[in-house]
Length: 124
Image (cartoon, rainbow, N blue to C red):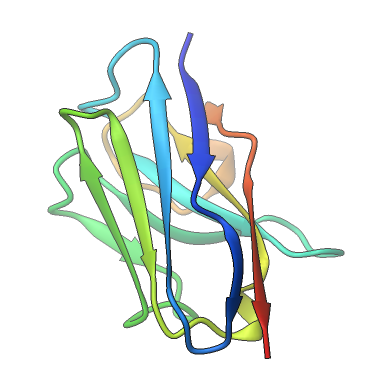
């Protein structure tokens, strides 16, 4: 059973940076596509970014392009999300997800495994 745990969330001022981590335990996810999603209060879950196993193929939501960067360290079974120039609209609970397949995807229904989420709060 795959278990995902996010960390690194917190309170940051607008314009600041945070780095989220997603640590996986259980069967290795070295060949699986993974992603970050987020959910703000009163809104549905929103795609942020996805990556293939090597990080050679990535995709970002338009709202975070140029500011967020996804990466993976498969030796540590960990995925990261570097978030720079944070805006108030980035405030949300951030979830990492993993899918059984290798192809990155932006649809949450493609992902079988989810973490519990980490809160990101941006103060203006």
